[in-house]
Length: 166
Image (cartoon, rainbow, N blue to C red; front, side, top):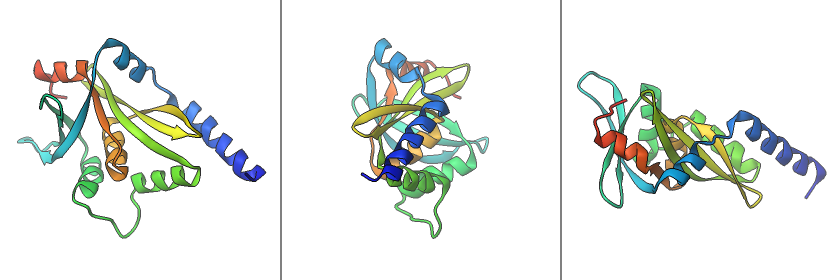
């Protein structure tokens, strides 16, 4: 491997480390089960708020998260198999990851805290996994584009079943 290529990979790894490795995934794994989710779609609720709808593949429990309009488009495009004529931000990030020989391994919705969902994007870099703090909508949009699994912590699904609607 060329020296400049190796240097760029280390810069990427260092940047990812500084960007926000999150303890959320470790916490989710230690406190319960992770459920693989399927994305059912993006809708507007009666108040006009965009929401992404997910469902556990195992027990069919639903998860509905409020997201912004731009985030809704970022999720809807890969769901509908649409490739935009110019790359969206998620496409750009995936291209950068590919150029640094990194890939998205999975997206994990780790917790619900003070009416805000948290997620971790797990990247595969040089045979190792790196966890990066992410908004759930971005993690879902990236995972959909590459066919990576989307997971949710048991505690997140329990909170949803108890009426939490952020």
